[in-house]
Length: 76
Image (cartoon, rainbow, N blue to C red; front, side, top):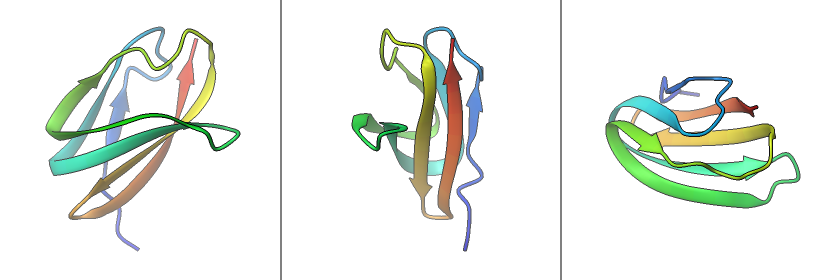
């Protein structure tokens, strides 16, 4: 199973965050209940706007040609 080798920063974040992954990728944001809160695409690096006003833990799934990365993002 290959990974997209994606990186999220800053993590924890207070507002926006950046996804960094090699090449073109898509991403989706879910809460711990599995509800999708947002999605999008980028290339190499993309800044994601504020996902929600609420703080908590969110699951960011990044898919690229290289594979899939699933990263927990903590929002303060």
